[in-house]
Length: 371
Image (tube, rainbow, N blue to C red; front, side, top):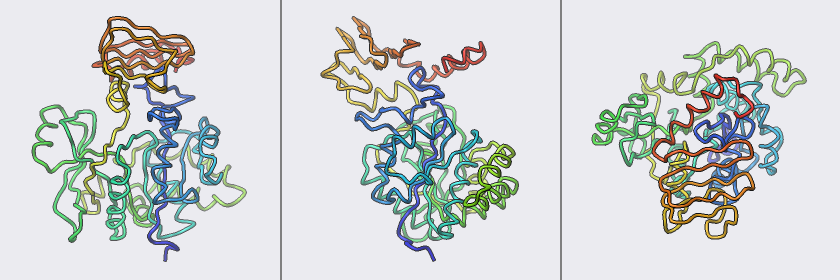
């Protein structure tokens, strides 16, 4: 039996470069390492802190890339060094989450594990912890649990989960199907029906249940992860990891495991309403951080006392002063202004999602030093 069945192992996959937050977020210093929380804490630090009521540092594992491992260790000094799992190259979320599950299973074969993204903001922590506890109940019953978010609008930028009836007499609902990011009218019908939740990409399950479902649906990925896990505590870890990792399929955990598990009735959800935000772009950041009386948000500093920003007759700006230079704006509204040492971005707030296309263009031109 699990040594502490009531406790959770919390896994935080910390990857991706957050291209919609360019030029602040770069491949070498991605968004989860930045203090975008309205406090001095980075998104990653805030994530670990938020999970403290359920998982002390010995039970928190970060999966990150080679380029970020040192920065992650510097930001999370309370974590044991062996709890930072370094993937040799990005293979999407399934490989990262499966590696963590296999490492946890070696310590505690029936452990309950939760996977939580490193770059989300949560406004109401107590509610968040309560929803995870409810999800752990479903996980103990052998379900792969996904945390669903009660939708507040017909959002086309998120995937959805279609809910079925309750499982048992608790708050757990069965998940019938995962849905891709929809068109607006489809999203509208989802929200009106009341049977759909946003897919937040946060999961809770027993590691043995997840690994057996991985073996059923993704035998090659499972076999590779099993080989790596077997060598994990031996001198050949790096050699086996280097050899096997590059052969693993690049696939998200939703596609690889959750969608197929839902079709055979093995996925459950608990609806959550805890002020969740995935900080996908600068416009969103402007909505969740504290604004001044004109609706202007200055990211990463105290709005009332910011010598690096001078705003006159402006409304609804999102300003990111990150170069040490003064950023001044006069008589403009609804803009994003991001100033970094080597790149400046100015765009309308309602086109924040399109910032990614600039990064794509820089890539195609070969200007990789800006990325």
